[in-house]
Length: 240
Image (cartoon, rainbow, N blue to C red; front, side, top):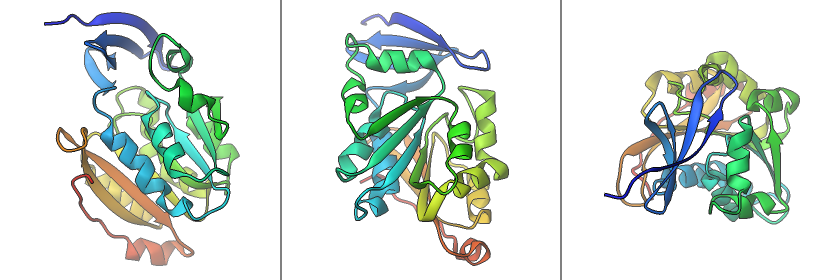
């Protein structure tokens, strides 16, 4: 069996340590021995971008926010989906994660970060949301394992009613809000509908055709909160 090579560590703002490893040509990030992400399993991250950005393809210059850089798979899929006039703002709070992706020794997200449509911000996505009221056509949040935060305990607030309201307020009319989660989260779905979003839930495998199923929550903003909350719906798909 090929060994795991420990490459580097990073510390999140709350003190959580993220460790970068290489194994048999793949890269992965672990927290306390638990795998957070891998370059072998990224289909659901790409589908998050494809689903959340679908309504933006007809816009000449959509503005999109991605919370969490990871290994850049969501960013790469968003750039592939969006038109040439798009702007994609990526908010990443852990500086070492940015450095890993820019390191030419690691085949990660350097090309996507160099795309002229990409604007990388070293900041907590909550500060970007607060400053960007009504400024985004789509917002994609993949900052943690989902509502049960793993990377940073502070991330859990993004999945609260107040956190969802903050994200909704940063959307333009008819904007789309997408969340990635490692597990189903019925209570979180109710939170999204309570914020006035029309909600679809997709169960998508980690690989293109197989693997653990992850949950993608896609919420569409409408013109009336109470009416949209009643119209919220959930569906289920297993990848595509």
